[in-house]
Structure formats: structure tokens, C-alpha cells
Length: 251
Image (tube, rainbow, N blue to C red; front, side, top):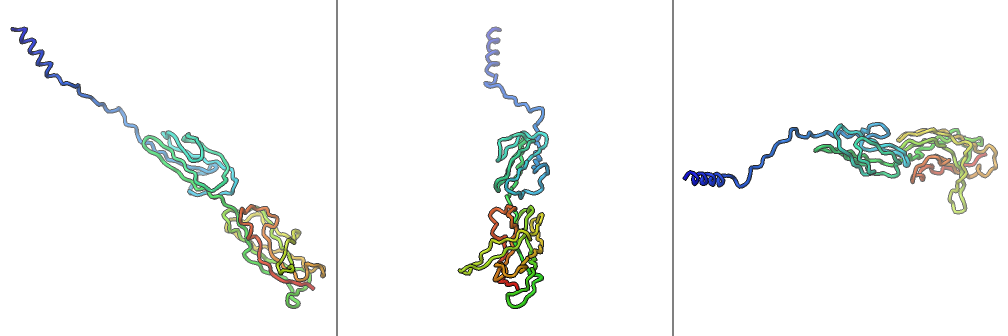
């Protein structure tokens, strides 16, 4: 009888056991913290404060970026580098966006830089004649005069050195003024002209010092900026000259 009760108790105990053991999920000792990326983009070692950069075509430069400790990596749209604290050197050849994204644990930050390829654009804004002694209509006393020309830089970049000179021309049989006679010996130099800047240049013209030469009868004059063509203005070279004024005769 005791054995029967013993086996019956064991059977009940087995039936009372759960079919599946309960799962136990333990919490990790620490939760990974969010990492602040704090991305800083620099140009030639100087932190950028603006999202736009104006440079000349062909500029050799270095873009660098720094991030906070804990940053896992960075990706960008101009190279395959992934080091979170690195730099890239290259040449700017066209206007475009440079975009970099750096990421940490649970966070990321993107920096965007717009690079614009710009150039100087030199133009003649005004011309005034000085020291010109009139004898009669379109006829003046020989001995020369001066042309005061105001030159402006309406482009997006400061210029390098350039010359401002006078040019004379005469009408052909069709009534078109033909120039090409630039007085290089009387040209005046300008070392630089900043973006949006202007300068007034006084250019001497040795007109009529020897009466009878072709350039001293029914002649037209104009001012040519960057007469030696030393400033690269890309496609804006067509506004470097003033309009023709004249005709002039010298006696």
C-alpha cells in the first residue's frame, strides 16, 4: 500500500510540473550612452563659419573634419575615407556640394559645404576726358590729353595685377571702328582690385605730338582694362573695354 501511494505522489508531482521552463531576461549592467558627434568642417585649417565658400577655379585646398570622442566613423560624397578625424586634399574644379556625415552610437550629424567657382570681372564704369583743348568741333590742340577711367570689379573674387590702357581706332569703309592699336607704353598698372571694389585711373594719351600721323586725324579712342590679358575672368572678357568716343582731330 505504501508503494502504491509513493508512486501515485510521484505521478502527481510530474503532472504538476510546467511543460516549458520560464525564460529569464537580464538587463545589461550598463546602457550604451548616446555619443554627440559635434562635427566641425575646416578649410585649409580654418573652421568654416559659413556653409558657402567662393574660390577660384584650380584652387588647391584641404578639407578637414573633427568630431567628439566616441564617433564611430564618417562618410562623404567626395572620397572613400571613413576616419572620423581626417582630411582630404584636392583641387576645386567646379561648383558643387561637399557633404559629410559622421555617426556615433544612436546619433549622427551632417555638414554641408557649397563651393562656388568664382572669378574677377573687370569692367569700365565711366570715362572722362581731361586736359583736352578744343580748337573747333572735333578738333583739338596737339600735345596730348588724359583719360580718367573708373574700373570696377563686379565679379566674385579679387583680381591680380592688371593694366589699363588707351586704344585708338579708325572707321573703315563700312563705317565700323577698327581698333587694335593699344598704347602699351602709356598703360597704367593696378596691383589688385577687390570684389566689389573700384579705382579711377588717369591715362595719358600722346595725341598729336607729331601732327600728320594717321592716328591724329578722325581717330577714336576707348579704354581697355586688363590690356595684357593677365586676369582670368573665365567667360566674362567681353566687358573689359569702354565704348568708343570721338572722332578727334589734332592740329
